[in-house]
Amino acid sequence: MTQTPKNKIKIVVKNEIKKLFKPNCEIEKIKRSDGSLEFRSCKMSEIDNWADSVAKKILKDLDL
Image (cartoon, rainbow, N blue to C red; front, side, top):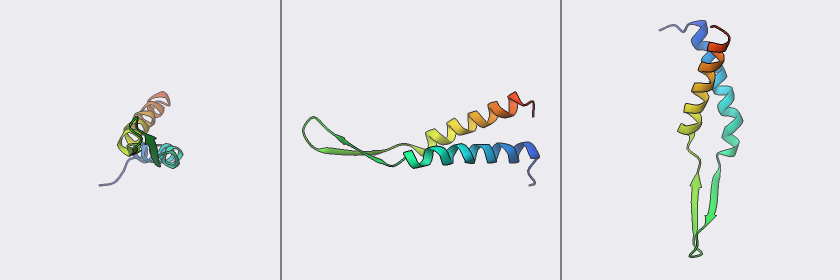
């Protein structure tokens, strides 16, 4: 399956957006009220979905 130029642009834009946010996706320590620690990391799937929608909007705004 060959990619259209539009799909290539979308993939590049999406990957660049994900690169911006990935460093902030580290494990976060949260101290609970009982004194124990909870560890959370942000969900890459949320960033992935957001980057996808931004890439689509950019292409739409550029009429591609």
